[in-house]
Length: 154
Length: 455
Image (cartoon, rainbow over all chains, first blue to last red):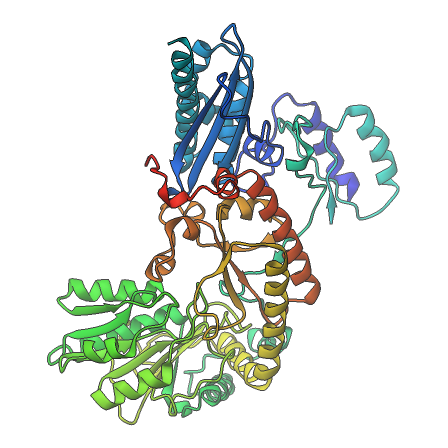
C-alpha cells in the first residue's frame, strides 16, 4: 500500500503549490494554530498609568474580549495581553491582535484594520464580527491609555 | 490511529519511508502546505498539544445512534435474498416480504401496548409528526380550527404549526417553566371547543426533560381532544403505554433506538378512530395514510430494534443512569458554576445538557475535538441565535452560549465517560483561565451590573 501512495507523496512535497489541506474542522489552519497555541494570554496591572485596557462585547452575544497594552515613554507598545470569552475565531482574533500590536507605536496600532485580521485568519462571513471585535478592543485599549495619560499630564 | 509528524523534511522523509516500506499495510498521510505549526505559544499552560488523532468518541446519542449489530443481522436477508415488494400479491417474493413487515408491525406495537393495526410505517419521526399535526388539523378543519403545542417542540412540529397558521388555523404555543415542564392548568385553560389536537413531545431532544404524558392524556380525554406525542427520543428508553397514557397519535423514529435511518412509524388510534388527511398521494398503502412502497429491510430493522429495546429497556436505562451519574459526579467534584439545564428529576439521564458558565460552548467543542458533541451555542449554527429551547426555559443568554449536550447511549462505555469527563474538566479550566468574565467573577465583580457594549 505504501508503494502506491509514495509517488503522490513526493510530488506533493516538491510541488510549490499545496494540494489542498486536510482540515480537522471547518476552521482555517491559522485559527486552529492561534486557538491551540494562543499568544499573550493573561492580564496586566490595570491600575498602571502606562497600561490601557479595552473590554468589548457582551456575554449575551457570546463574545467578550479584554485586551491590554503597555506603552513605554516613547509611545511604543512593549507588551500586550488578552483574555477572551468566545468562540475559537474570537480567541484567535484577539491572540493575533496582541501579536500584531506588540512593538508598534500607538499611532501605528490605531491603523490596524479588522479586514487584515479576517484575511490572515480566513474568517468566514458568519465570523467576521470576531475580527471587528478585535479591532474595537485595540481601539478601546488605546483610548483608555490616552485618557490615563491626559489625566497624568493635568 | 494515525500518528501525525509535523514539520517533515526531505531527508527525514526519505529515512522514514525506507523504514515504513519494509512494513506492510501502512498508510502515510502527509498534511502538505502552509500549516504553520508554531512553538510560538509563550505560555505552555495554554498550549494544546494534539499528537494523535483518531475517530472521536461518540457522545451525541440524541442526534442519532449506531445500528445495533443484532438489528443488522435481522435486516440483511431482506436486503439480499428476500427482496420482494410487500405489496405484491401474486408471488412468494411479495408474500414473504409482507409477512416480515407484519411481524415488524407487531414488534413495534408491542413495545407501546398498541394493536398492530394501529401502526403505520413512515420515513421517520419528521414525517410522522407532519402527518399527525397537519393531517388531524386539516381533516377536522371544517369544525375545529385550533391546535395546542409547546414552545420546546421539535422543529418539525413547530414548522408544521407555522404552515397551519398560514392556512388560517389558530395555534397556541404553551410556555414551559424553568425546569422545562409545561403547566397542566395552563394546558387545560388553553383547550377550547374549537381545539382538535394537542401535541406535546414525550422527551425533549435538547434538554432531556420528560413531560407528564399520562396527565396530559387524561386531560385530553376528558376534553375530547386528540393527543399526539413525539416520542422519538423516549421510545425504548422509558416505558410507554398508549392506552394507559391515553395517547391518540405517537411518532416513532428508527435511528434513535439503534435501528436504521430513514424509517419511522406512527401510532394512530382506531378506537375511538382518529382520522387524518394524508400528506402523500399514491397507491393507498398503510391504510391510505401513507402511500408509497414500504421499505421491507428498514421496517424489519425497526421491528428488531423495538424488540431489543423492549427486552433490554431496564438494563439499558440502568446502565445509562449509572454512566450519567458517574459523569456528573466527576464534573461537579472538580468544577463550580456548572448548571444542568432542565428538570433534575423528570428527565432522561442519557441527555445531559450542561452550561459551563464563563466558557463559550463552541470554543469548548473545539478543544474537545476527540469527542463528538453537540452544543446549544449559537456559534455552531449559521444563525448566531442560541437555542430556542434554552430560551424557552429562561436560561440567561450567556449561559445558553455556554451549553453543551452530552448524549449517552447503549454502547457508551465507562472508560469513554471517564475520559470525556476528565477532558472536559481540563479544558473548562483552561478556557476559564483565558476568560475575562471568569477573572471578573474571581475579583468579585458582578457581571450583570456591567453595561456591555452591544455589537
